[in-house]
Length: 197
Image (tube, rainbow, N blue to C red; front, side, top):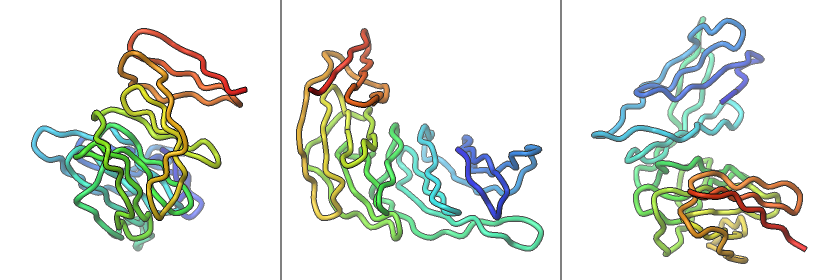
């Protein structure tokens, strides 16, 4: 993912055991932060950029936020917060209005977290499978765990489900693609187009 540090375009890479920042112009290593995995776990979640703050997570590691700052001739990372209870394993949370929304690991339920201090604001009580996606759709969020498309109000107070649609017969691993009033859903065996009148 890309971020800008004091005008320098930087490529952020979540490698196997480190989070690194590379200069976009020449690939030079600008900073590096150890992000050890637990047991056999690995990360398949894209770090979230919010200015010079990075929010990252991975299987079994909870969620953390760091700020990348200038230190002498280089850059360093300062931890802002850590939430050991909630993280994600296979889906990248959505950052919206200072809030993080995603599907938790462990637990596999929908959650909302304050992006500024890492505090959990709410969790849904329905347990889903480990795979799923969360997508920002303007005034609402779309969650697609298993095979139901769930329309959620991006509320900080509580879980508010606005609608739910069965959109696939098989497990869905891919992000739904939104184009105007069309939603494309790819499940294990097929691609479907859903429209709203």
